[in-house]
Image (tube, rainbow over all chains, first blue to last red; front, side, top):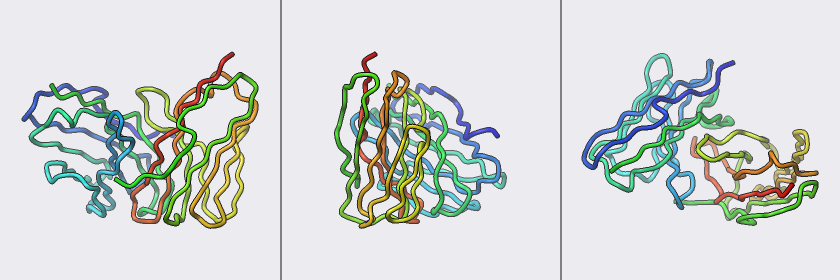
Length: 113
Length: 110
């Protein structure tokens, strides 16, 4: 069974640009979660989507947004990029809404110059 | 953001030794999870704990869900070089938001 997949693996942008990161959950999983792992800050919860709806949001500004498609894949969009947005962005999925074990993808490394 | 208190922060041990790390919280959790992360990769699930007092093993790994629901520990027996990595505890309350510990960096000397 395929795990969580993310694309691209690496992304380089400049300040002010927009970044779009993509995630495909494990087959059968309906919930998708996004986390940011910046150096020295640990893993921080960004967003949770289930059945196409945003269910919970972490303490991040509105320029971090996303959506979930009917096939349960998800996109994370980061607008007006800032240098401190440089991080590993991890996507996870689980079978049900928020109470199940989360399985992580390999991440997208975003570098903002 | 909120984090769990995970200790120790790092460990440097000899191959074959046992390892123990733990996480504590001021709040209760419904689920405790332990992950291992290699550099540049996503966390890989090691053990999931769903009930207070639960003791679960996965090969050389053993983890327990504290009876107060505010703590958990992970033991690794007879460490080997491939155990090297960063170990994270994480707690879940049902809001979809995993709360992570700061991580324990494990280095194993052959």
